[in-house]
Image (cartoon, rainbow, N blue to C red; front, side):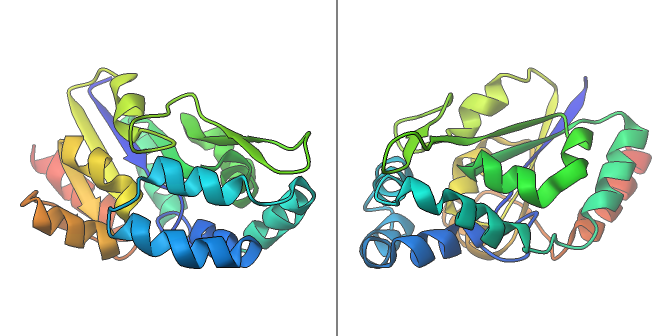
Length: 211
């Protein structure tokens, strides 16, 4: 493999920030207190997300998945997958949210992505318990750790928010929108602004054709 694409899920593949909406819906008081602290980078994602998730009853997990299932995907995702398939370039979904949420939205499409890395939950006790194979100092899913599992020449990142910052800083090429673009501006890291996956497909098509 010469190239690989790492794509965030929440607010990237989905149109809306579904995971944040879930936290606010199922743990409103704790979310109101901790989410602004995470966005301001005074509290790590690892600490904040874990605390909020582990305050939610396990009995709510089915409702969380049903809430997520209705979320629309951003236009052009399937067309981007078609293009990457033709180019022989894998797409890996890297989410700081729950694996189950990624799976219900992608449905049969998950068979077309190379891998999904996300937070797993244990529902055997009264409250949710979270587990991640890639827990880092500041993230429940340390996306740079995931990237290191794929030694290739060119690593392309697609994202929209704080959870994608370290991935964006590490990538050879990054497509950024919303909060991620603002954070990358602060770090003076160059990026390509995008609205939908057609923008990304068209940019890569032009770039790879000329390259």
